[in-house]
Image (cartoon, rainbow over all chains, first blue to last red; front, side, top):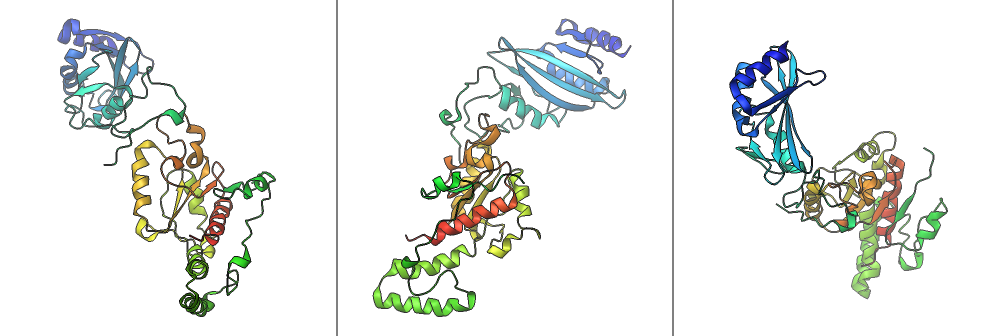
Length: 158
Length: 207
């Protein structure tokens, strides 16, 4: 069906940078891709596959690597698609989706703030929940567990 | 609607054992320390004669602290203007306290929208580190003399989100707090009870 067609099209377009399309309940599927082709994949999906809306961006810390995932919505096919890319834990960087879908702005700021994923080309990659000057990315598994009295936070007054 | 109000004034150690009994009496003012007129029963039309008398006495005796201070305290505690600043669900109870049913204006408590016009900061809700420096800015923008009330469990000690990475564990980490109000959220009459406790503290102010 739709998933099979999309898988064949992505394999023809991106070759071995397209790592597979997993089944995902309620969605077309879950596209795993190499982060080096992120920007080209975003533009291809928006312009030629009709995924005009980015619903959300999120990140997961798997300790040995980090995952960034995107959920797309297609008005033409009235269906969702999820993208997923694995990033190295010591250098979690991927191209920003803001030039393709401007709605990714706040989502990528959130993923940077909480999970520490850097988005290259984001116009304004500041923290969104935590104050500027905060030392940690609090949803990482390495976040120090402590009593709140021990927490030293530099609340910057700007 | 079941538990009685559990409000503890901060710098009054005498009230602490009584509060455990559930029906704590308000701190009693030493009437001997209040000279020349009954500050309890002073009405608005009597204010100017009382102030004249106090000023005359001031010039005569130069006893500044014991004479003019009760007049200032009387005026200040009957016109507490809190900042109209809501943070979380406690702000709903804060707003209800100014509605027709509880009517906080009968105590002279009128919310103002500018910190320059306020002398009371009621921190109603969860304070996060993101908003912490804005809270400090608002407090510092208020003119002296000023007071602060921590309303609800979140503002008092972080509440159920105490161990979260984003929550300030008690607003007294940021600003000095005069009265703590327990409850999650406290009911409007509980908030008004805290304001009346603060009025007692202002009544006893001598510095």
